[in-house]
Amino acid sequence: MWGPERTSLLRRAFVLAPVLLALAACSTSGGLFKAGGSGKAVTPTSENVGTGSSAVAILAADEAHNLSDGTAGSTYLAARLATTALSGTPIRLLVRRYDGKSGSLQKAATESAQSGAKLVIAPADDATARALANALAPRGVSVVSLGQSGDPANRLFGAFARRDEVTFSAAEMKRRGYGAVAIVQTTDAASAAYANDIGEAAARAGLKVQFVDGGNAAAAAAQLQSQAAMGFEPRAIVFATGPAVAAGVMAAVRAVPDLQGIAVVGNGGWAVAPPAGLGKGWYPSLSRQGLAGFVEKFTAAYGQRPTVEAAVAYDLVVLGGALPQVAPDDPFGTTTMTNAQGFAGVTGNFRFDAGGVARRAFSVVELK
Image 1: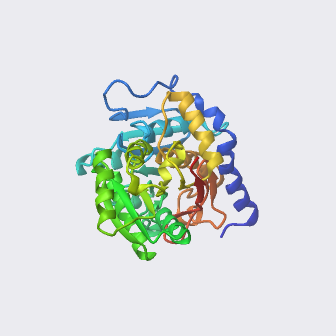
Image 2 (image 1 turned 135 degrees about the vertical axis):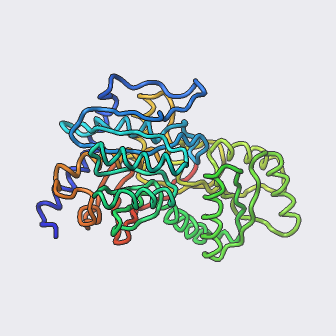
Image 3 (image 1 turned 120 degrees about the vertical axis):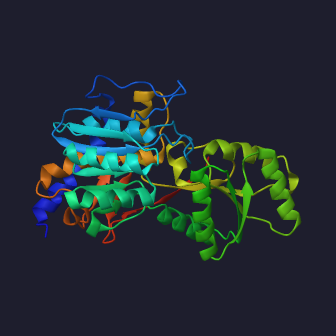
């Protein structure tokens, strides 16, 4: 069990991350580069960043389509940014690009273990995270994914539970009296997955749900008008998309007299790219202050805006550097990772529960 002094030290070590965020504009590998513009993949196939004693590995993809409209490769870029975030504790980062192939996954697992990394950050895909954990747990290596799959007995932890966000949003929609909502989605994987999750959460909350294709703004407005003519009159339009699609759809909606006064509901990805001019509405958000500071530093370093997943990855890399300093015997084991005090970073306070899933608080941000 943790003694009170050691628990306090563990928490203080990671609370340093937001305070020292200004240091992250410098790279241990010769200066950060500007992202985007080349059309090539941003996340390298293989890269080692830094020479610190604390080794962290990350398996990342470019994720050009996301709910934040953030730059491709944001997760990798944020991880790179985090390598110098802890004063006096430089982090050595092993980067491997995720291509979805099992052979590449096994190679990444082997190379991560050989590098001395005791923590591997995995993509949000639950199957990938579990496969990595199965390969690495016998070697004493823990996996933390950007998704919501946890299994502490197998050293697997999920750092970003979207189901908590959609449950929060569904409860807020019910509280505001939205009896029916239209969910706008695109064919992108991230959009389709979020639309499914928020749709299920809304239905569980007792709301009526219809889905709308947001691939074409005018067509989306026409579909909403057609649904209204058939008796389905949503009180809110929920966007399982980035702010840009929402802006286009709402511009088209405002041109339809029958669709005036409908509220806008965004998603947590908007917290790093707050939209304007959408009309009345709101979106769920993690720590506003921490995210604002992270966005400022990321933008200063790369000239682009990040995704909210990038902020989560940033916190995990910092965690990878901090925990070995205060729990050297098994820094990423169940006892350490699920300690009752939890951690604090640019995404706010979070705590891994007994199931290995990070629990986070969300707040409502009103659109301006």
